[in-house]
Length: 128
Image (cartoon, rainbow, N blue to C red; front, side, top):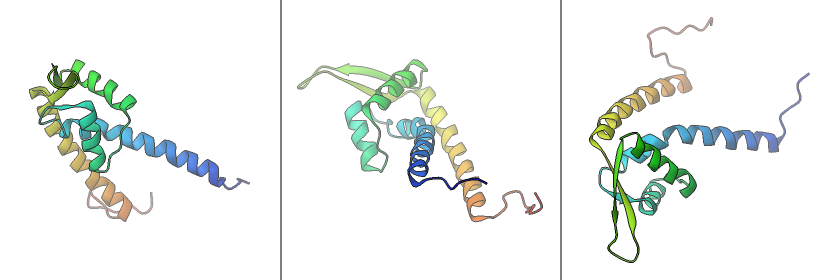
């Protein structure tokens, strides 16, 4: 007989799975906010104001990876109190963003249907 999952185990599993879900949307969220050049801390604040908290230790490696993949471009601005690296979406990143937005729309439609029990393909196979 299976034992009930303890509340602590359930909480830990929830935290882990939530982190996995969030990790999957970070590229889309980041690209969507870099249509205008921003430095990392400003991007963190921008995302946070819109309800998506991201740690510096997660964002900066992501920015470097996206830049190395050609999806972002960056330049240093040495004016002001300290030098800052500003990131902006590249033309390739803009093209990819459009594809990811379409994919996101498709996925949310599918998930909405799954979660509310409606069928997306016209058939409801309740025998499965």
